[in-house]
Image (cartoon, rainbow, N blue to C red; front, side, top):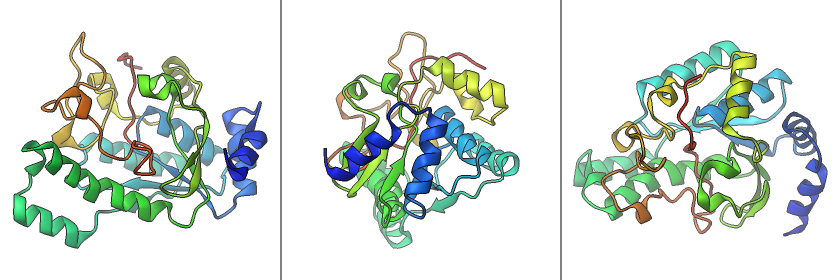
Length: 250
């Protein structure tokens, strides 16, 4: 753990998520940023930022392939919470080259093609969004997947050279949903229709009873290959897509 990571860990020890965000916003004014994909967890954190009018930049990755429901909750969030959300789009030249050479649905043809699409639509824009910041806020929770049980709420991102802080890391899904109910926070209704993880529309389907909660993402691929690169520590980023284990409507 480097010095900056240790400093943030000490600053936030014992604080509620709201208190931690306020302290960090003061300490890293202009160098703190939050990524949202408009899932349950991200909506909770966006509300916390908006309620205290914290100087934390908010951004999202506009891949060009999002669900209509995602655009709807994005717009409702702007209307109800009065926040500014910066959209980062894929590099137009790279996207044009890929689609011109391989067509609009090449990601179905091979894992390599799908990862290329994820890189262009997600990873490259993410790196642009994070550049120049020291602290990245995410909506990750420990119980979201098995590979997150060994994570901690403050960690160093070597690839992007900044610290990641997960303010609701220890929350349960019930706590997340209770917060949304209590404060009437807009949320993506796809969650109520069997979508625990909501990404690009062509790559996401509802999860059926008894299926693994990640079964709806890139369902045509082998389970072991289901990642887009954003979650890879080597890529220096954390997955923006929100995943949950339980499927209960609000």
